[in-house]
Length: 212
Figure 1 (spheres, rainbow, N blue to C red):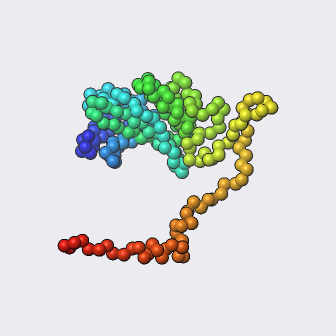
Figure 2: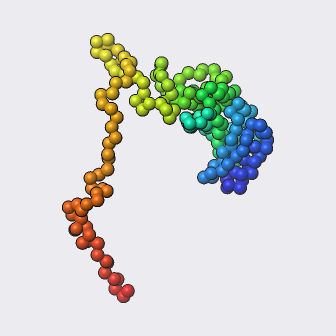
Figure 3: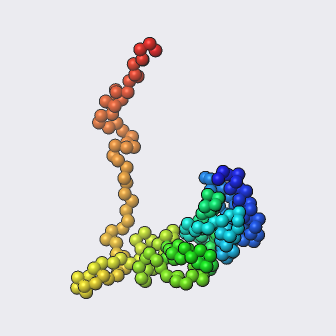
């Protein structure tokens, strides 16, 4: 679908959902609609059921973290319309305490997507029947895809031969993080290196072609 048709579709969606859809944009051949997080169920039902949309397949639910903002998360939804042969992205801003309605009743396939988003970012989905962590371990502390989550985590695991079980312990660093310089010694040198004179001598103009 070309940009003009995507723009028309975006205008149709925003006009049909006053107070729920705030606007739309097109970038790289993709339509994005800015929405209110609390209205996601109403919006998803419209996108699924409206004859001009028919976005009947949910592709993903994820988030992007902007820790400097008051509403630090963009909760992102992707839907596919086989009828239109196109996709739409919904973007809703949410804070750490925003209660985003679950889409389980409209799209049962959102189940694990929402659990994953809660596990990795801490986005809260209300109305989900089983809002537990999905990818991290039991008792995991924090949400690992937040920008302010420490690279080392908070705990580490090891097998204890004496206790014959896996034990959890606070992370202990044997050395502080260092800033390693991965630049090759042959790159960026401001002085001649052995062999440079041969390389310079080999850059001679090519002989003209016959008949040129």
